[in-house]
Image (cartoon, rainbow, N blue to C red; front, side, top):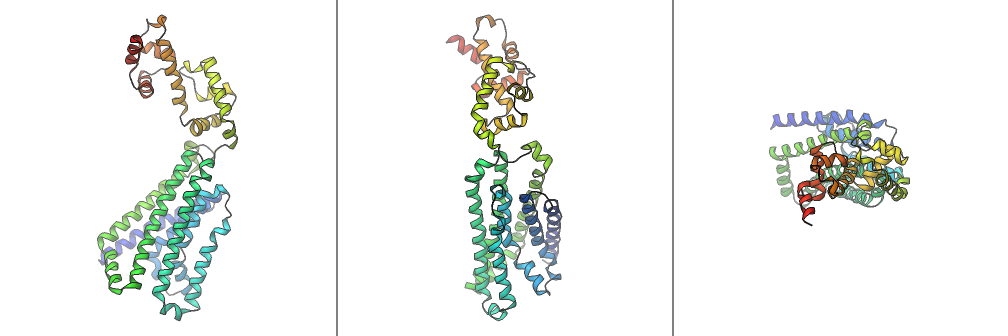
Length: 364
């Protein structure tokens, strides 16, 4: 068991050090929501480091207090501000409760140590209840934010990524707090129950499982940080994470313009026709056109254009003068330069093969 304790401290030291170092990539970012993420990573790193380094600060009253009791309470507003900063929340108001919580505990520890010691079990239970309730409140607030404000403000991919991050991290932290609440409550209610519960959580299997879950949390955060890099975001969602507000009001006009150009000029019959070419035809920036397809049509440009090519193939196959062409020839006339792509899209949109469609059409 002593060997396990050493391994446990070593692993948490590694995890905490990684988070601590990663936080500095975000702490000095110009974007407020990224700085909120940086502070969260910094505090989470300290929480992991606390397992192996608390022994070095336990003799210093104030330092040991902040290290042990004043870290996790700041997680909820930091997590919330990372995903909801685009809603222009007033940042300072989110930290009123954490600051008051820390001050009250500090006053009890320094100024009323006798009262604190004689009522320690009650104070720890109330503290755990407040902390858990605070997490749950912010978690609920974030869910409301996703369903209302962020639904219309963020691009779909960004909103899904933020929601996954918010649910996973909050779920992990609330789970930890529920364990803490169970331990502190059992200590208050019954000493034997507390000892039995403590022995359960101190067992090798449970500690290994909890450590593995902690490792997965850190791995998840590392992957998430990669997706938050400018390079990844530029490739994945474009320069901005928010929807183009002017596009929301002009989506119908852009749709009508695109349909008019495609029906009148049939540029999709050219296999090399690209989004850049369409942007020139309708006189719109290419990144704006890309956002239109992804956010308002819910398709990629290739899916959108290939649907027109499939319709063109169907039209051509119904003309008697085209009976001399086989399926491949007709698909090329419609704009496909790949037989595999053509068959994949046709089956996807029509639920049958091109040959089956032609035979069915001849019977009718």
